[in-house]
Image 1 (spheres, one colour):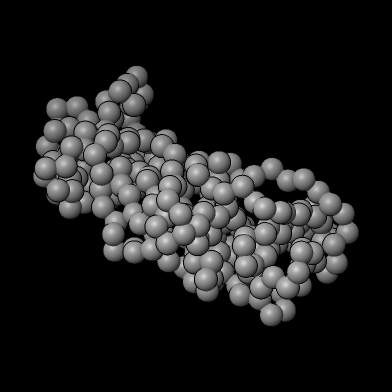
Image 2: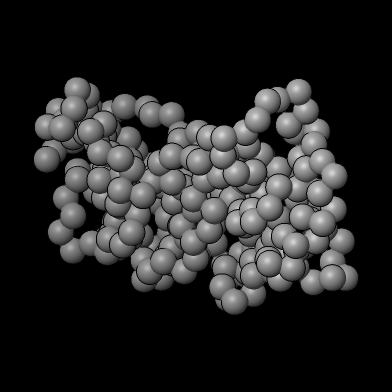
Length: 238
C-alpha cells in the first residue's frame, strides 16, 4: 500500500490516562487506502522514537491495531508507507490495542476496550521490541511515568480480583481479606476503597465490584512491582 493523504487523527481515549509520555520528535499520519473489512480507511501513524521509526496500521474493521512495528532509522525521512519489510513487530500488540506513546526505553500500548473502570496496558522494550510488562489499571486514577531510560518508573492503580463485597457491614472484614489475598504488607498504609460512597443510591448490582490498589514498578525490573501507600479505588463492573 502507498501513502495517499495526510490525516490528523485523535489519540485513543484510554491513552490519555497515561501521564509523562515523551512528546514525539517527529510524527506523520496518513491514509493507506479503503478498508476491505468495513466502511472507512486504513490509517497509518509513524513516530520517531530515537533509533527507530515506530509504525502503527489501523483498520476500522479490525479490533486494535492491525500491526505495530519498529524499523531502524536510516535517515531523516519517515518511511510511513505501510511497508513492513525488515521490521521488528511488537508481538501481541496487534489486535490488543493502540500505541499510546514512549518513555525512556519503553513503548506503551493501551487496550482497545475497557471493562468497567479497567483497561489493559502492555509495555515493550525499544531495544528489541519484546514485551516486558502487562497489567490492568483503573481509569479512575492516571498512570504516571517518571525517570529516564532504564529507570522509568510507573505509578498506577493495579486491578485485583474482588473475592468479596467491601460494602456495608462487611466492608472491614472484606477489606482485610482483599489485602491478604493481594499480599499487601500489613505495615503499608493503603486505605480501603470508598465503595459505600460509590454505590450510594444505586440498586442491586449484577456484576462484581472492581477493586484497584495503588502500585508502582520499575519497568527495567518487572519483579520490582510493589503496592504503595494511598487509597484503593472502587468501581462497578459493567
